[in-house]
Image (cartoon, rainbow, N blue to C red; front, side, top):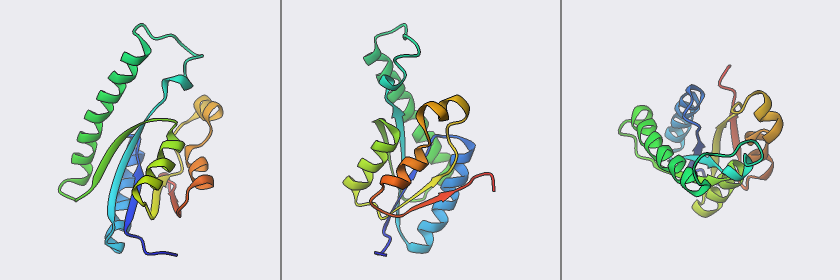
Length: 147
């Protein structure tokens, strides 16, 4: 295994994400690694068969992106304080964007939760963690936030 210098933590701003981020901070500390936190705004095209928004889709996606950036700023401030990190808000298919970010940023390890979507959404869209584990070009440490 190559040296771990860059760790990525995908988040969804949930309580579970807070738990996973704490675990990632511990791992980053042990390896003295740089920590990156990302959130992916799900592509609206994935939902277009379910509803029609009242505003143009491009405007709706932009509002989601702006809101996610604000949420990310608050999330990292609340959970990372003064810890050095990088953060990004991406848009598209969640698993694909995580993998793209890994490749573009030389990430050595992904730390992510095993639980995200629940119920019908999981059946329709599948497990992001499972997709990332299957396609990641680096090791993936999955953590069950309920244990």
